[in-house]
Image (cartoon, rainbow, N blue to C red; front, side):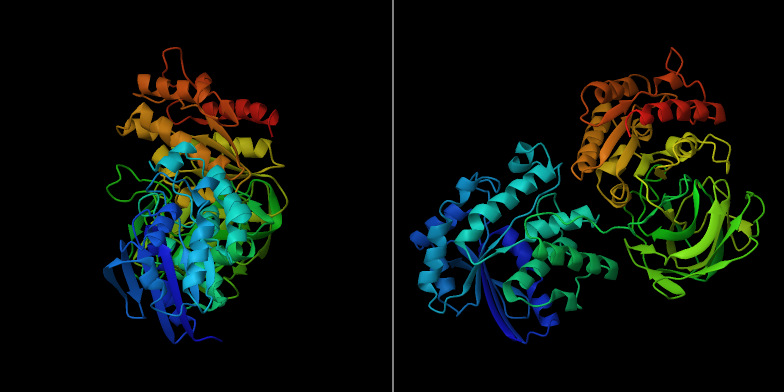
Length: 599
């Protein structure tokens, strides 16, 4: 194995992002000597690099790293840097500060001149690579993103096409950093950006660095042990996966592996992470009872760390709040005929549940933990009794959990609850993404009489995952964080949001924009997205009407379900802002009929 590497970038801030962690990655892979260089001009395009080279302009900040951090020397030319070392690899990064577009082939027409210049000056013939750029967030105001109306998938396809068809034949290879970032986005890794355009200090830069080092050196990044501060072990594994997939398929997004492919949700209970609670760091025993929708003989449970939504007024926790460092152990599952909110029901028998063959697992910040498959036989209408020990100081929970739960034998919601109870079967996956109205608050507690549960029961050949959460807002979904990561695991998403935004001072324009972003994020991943109009709720008035007018006339989605039948002529709720059992039954009936014509 080659143990010394000399790598130079002719770049800009994107090469800064890519190279920031390169030395640590190389040293972690057993390389003993590194010499890294980055010629930096903010936003510098290929055309400007060519002009600077042709005129030997000393305009670059020359960043250097020999294993002990980065130093900067101003006033350096490309010629000076190229002839200062016998480089193994010289990489080129394009930019857009002069109006160039990463999605326009003409912005790379002078690339052959730059490549020839490098080869003429470097007598040892280094490999010349091009670093493929990445797609920013839809809400970012960068002109290139605006030009694509925030359509990440369309922008990526153009970047990848140009890299494959035009750039690749002119160089010794393309490092698919942009593909790796898109892969990471597809599997829900976040945050990837610090400003919607440049990469986040830890995770985003780590993914780009892993991808580039693997492409430049041929080293196996699966052996990397080092990770930046703030990046968990679970995130590291997914980052390496995203990079390896990009190297294998450099110009197309690799479909996310996500949750076990042959397991689908089998409860319509809303059990997402709503907020966080403080514990004493001692082990406690929890029992949670989840009603079964269809039934089966083999199950798996998912636990997640980050909060999915903003709780109450946001003073305690907001969407994507991380906990981490808590444990689950001694898990077992049984089946009960029913459950009570006052007294913990006892199953006739128990089945032990493990995590990758172990009795205990630590849940790191922003991690997902899925149990091994386990055998229990459950039927529709029965209840899974899930008992486990949890231990930690700050943990996620669902403060408004609408099913029976107990901690140390007493009714309590202060425990991490399974985000999904899944059964092994083949079915189209459908998610309800909404607030407390979707979760089922207003219907009889612990009864599965809310409209989402009744719809799931009526359409039992499909698999429904209830991602409804009390206090949730459209902005929580548009943040593209933990909540949306769960939504991305589905084939169809049915959206119902807006009430809590309008109740908390957000304008109709805010809600419309958040819905637009959310729908675009889902549809860009090939997920069919249906949107329900904002249901009636006390005090919403004209703002609700404005949002609903936008949903029905201007929002680009796969279909709109109008909930106006839930309101009286004056707009007041007929069955309560949180629909009661009667209102839930009516909603489920009409939604079921509507969906049967579309799915």
